[in-house]
Image 1 (cartoon, one colour):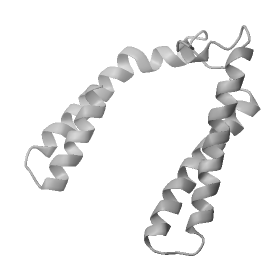
Image 2 (tube, helix red, strand yellow; image 1 turned 120 degrees about the horizontal axis):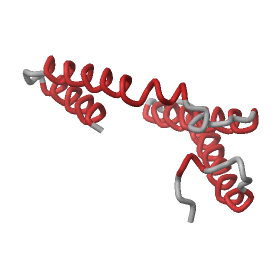
Image 3 (cartoon, helix red, strand yellow; image 1 turned 180 degrees about the vertical axis):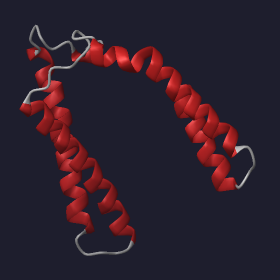
Image 4 (cartoon, helix red, strand yellow; image 1 turned 90 degrees about the horizontal axis):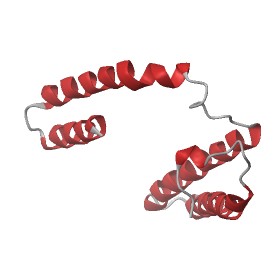
Length: 122
């Protein structure tokens, strides 16, 4: 949380051209090093914490990334009045909706090996 907050404040300070951006960059570096020493290596060493990804899950996550990028690019191209912006935006929204619906309807079919990344499912 410290790393994300420092990164956001660093960006704001750079945009507004305020001093002390170096302080935020040092804080980001220190928090990353601290995280890596305390938690980062434990993730790679602990077999129980590793997520078992199947090819279907990887493809669905790739579809989520493609959908999000197509929404972003479609929105930006819509501001430039490009003719293919609206279809690109619609494809992105359709991909994201399919991803969400897949997660909603597949929540009841979780097996013993899938723990939902440790999140509580309602």
